[in-house]
Image (cartoon, rainbow, N blue to C red; front, top):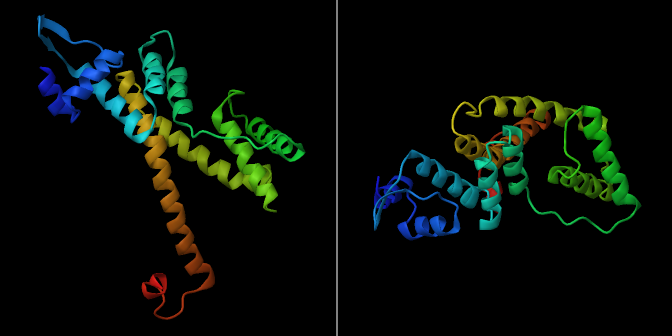
Length: 222
């Protein structure tokens, strides 16, 4: 297909495609003349992945280039490729000033991960995120330990086994990484929404609902 067809197929403007070509994010097409090149399904997959990283993952171009380099490195196993994408889309964190409380939170996060038998790299961004969450909860007077976190760890283990199981690992690596990025970000949002809906339903069940209250929108508009 020509670049105009590639643009129509992927909904990516031609100037943007040319920019990706110049930056090396998109491989060159097959040159058929001095001014014309042909593109194929591999270019469609790559553009879909770039869009997922840019629009869903909110990654800068430099980070996208690192993820794409991992995708293209055939010597890297899928664990490393998916890990590169996972780490890239992790939110930036700013650790609090060093102190005893912060160190306790980090130690608690490490103990939890070790106790669960999870194989997590020491530099994993989520390890720091967990420590920050535990640190904040402790400062708010709501400390959590391995026992109080057990319902959450059981739930996420079941969920992640499902998510990893449905990744299309028998196809192109771009497709698997695209699904991982979209799934991590968007399914995370769906999970949060479902949790809040379940909270509302459980609250109605546990505490009861006054006659006419359930479904009455008036009290939410005041």
